Image (cartoon, rainbow, N blue to C red; front, side, top):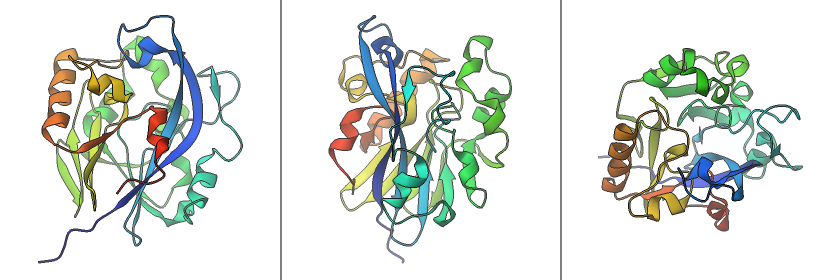
Length: 240
């Protein structure tokens, strides 16, 4: 029997958005402004390079403000820090298709993109109040492989269906030498959301019943969480 590969996970910082705290923590600290990094994740065993999410649409000074990207925070530069070119990435796994997670998909025309079918279906026709969360000019230029529910994509890499933030949100479980990590996207934007009792959902959500079922699934996985927008993830350069 072949051993399950152990991966390393590198957080990639792709700019910063300034938002009300209640954007990340539903109905908590209204009026308090916080700086939240946009994050993609390089997952590699030294042979295969996998990207989880691709970060935000490039700042244009008009949309998604306040939003800034400092020099070196573009995705190509962040990958280069780890000796990886976009053409070296063979698989991209999307937690969901919001603008700040799917904004650089076009850098990887050769990669296979995996996303939940429900996310694709919702992105085509979301609730009108949530239309701005999707950058239609970009996300539908990518060809996706639709997943239905939980799936093992590769030895040591699996996804679980975790709707609530969006109908097709999914979380990615990665095997490492330090045990399993779970990349949860915006299901858990900040560590504080997960540490609270009861756990706190994102300000943007589509179904609270599904959301709390998903949070409990994440907890039951016993994997260490990697949240979608917490600056604390950059306290470590690598996980695993």
